[in-house]
Image 1 (cartoon, rainbow, N blue to C red):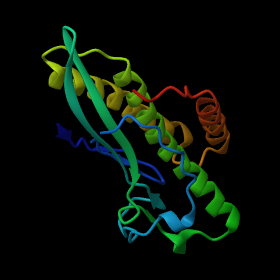
Image 2 (cartoon, one colour; image 1 turned 90 degrees about the vertical axis):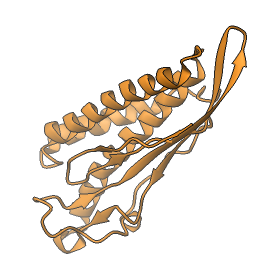
Image 3 (cartoon, helix red, strand yellow; image 1 turned 180 degrees about the vertical axis):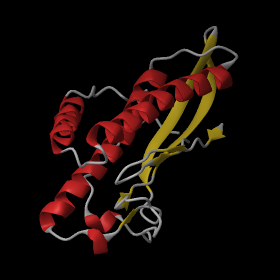
Length: 185
């Protein structure tokens, strides 16, 4: 089974998430200005950067006992060609650092979503209706992280509220620090 789900996220950086599959852990990526290869949009409504991520998932089902065990492959992909940063609107190294930090938050949310998907599906026994059950899990978790992205941009006012941005930065550090290591199935 292969499936793509796309979700949009606003910001000084926006993330789009799509889904396809693998139950193997993936290392966290620290964003740099070199990750943004796309052409900035002229009518971006004040947005300085846009981050495009895909959560790619696939699975194979095998009968196990009275149910099914699904072997997932879930990858997080940073789509560099679709991600952009309007460098003409960045006037200082400090401003670039702040923009990248905010964008990193969107990438971190996508990474946390991928890790939660890996953790949940690796612990789930599925019935004969595994396609529906797997999609329900993906939809539920995706909705949670879509809302988290919206809250992030709203709370930080797209990074311009530095106090809230700092609070979110600390939140992300804690989430990453205490991320369970058992994401493999």
